[in-house]
Amino acid sequence: MSAILEKMELEALNLPREERAFLADRLLSSLGGEALSDVDAAWVAEAEQRYAEYKDGIRQPVPAADVFADADRILG
Image (cartoon, rainbow, N blue to C red; front, side, top):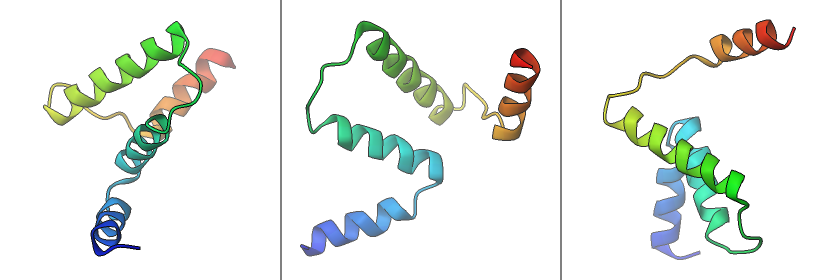
């Protein structure tokens, strides 16, 4: 493994969990394969917009426990 790749890996592994997941998705998507459906592409665009809003301080994070509690309430 090259020194640059080792440095990138170390930095990526030190990112918060959500950012690592986002990066992993972007890297896997860059490998090609199946084209996204219109629905999948819309969700990716929405996620990218929300992430940009979060980074810009426009959108506040919601704790996962709150999200799952709401889902349980709605689906329960």
